[in-house]
Length: 106
Image (cartoon, rainbow, N blue to C red; front, side, top):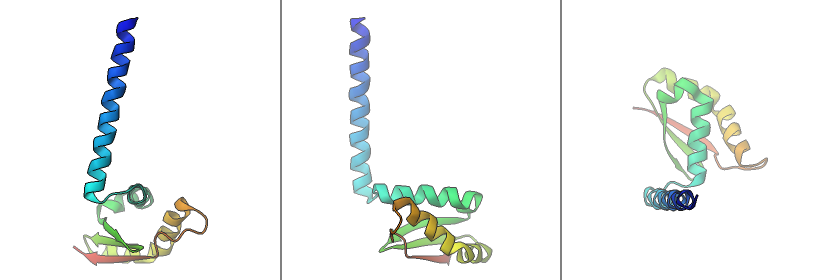
């Protein structure tokens, strides 16, 4: 039984080190929890369209999106209010994390 406790402790230490490593990488890449949440919501809201209209950045409340074709630019433009609302709802009732979406062709 003592061997199991040691094994579990080693696993917990390994996970702790991995989490620390991930935190360092996120900081170095400029990725925070807010950005990760926005990416996840973007992918969920757009579904397969997220592959054709990729979220490439977030700056000062503006989502920067690169679209593969003008049809995707149009689609995102039509849905922009809905997308902004969904993202901001995630952060709270009166949150204004995202204010605008800029879409450009690849």
